[in-house]
Length: 131
Image 1 (cartoon, rainbow, N blue to C red):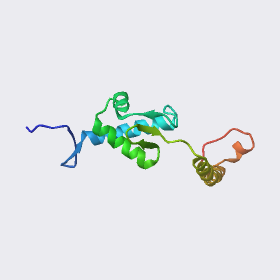
Image 2 (tube, one colour):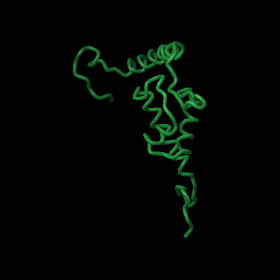
Image 3 (cartoon, rainbow, N blue to C red):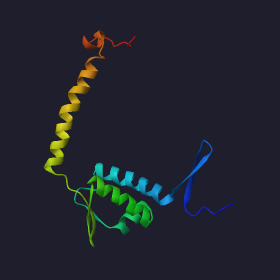
Image 4 (tube, one colour):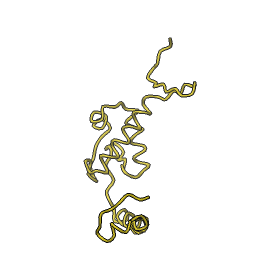
């Protein structure tokens, strides 16, 4: 049997796919950190270092860098050479984009919901299952 050397193996339909564990951990770290930023557990402007992130997420340097590069590409994290990283601030443009998107999506959602309402529910009666 051969040595695994830090790779995870996923098999499906007879083939073996090797994916470096740093990539998998980097993607998991990306997802976790992005959720923490979106939920404001990492507030805009918060500064941190690779070492702090590695300790917090219990990951290695390669995984940490994979996660950070993806977050930088997304515009969620800003690199500060020789000073670490910081969570990107929320700008007026960001807020305007969110509201512009809501102006498009919410009327569509309302029209879709209105098309599914039944007469009993609309008149205050007992709703029944659609037939």
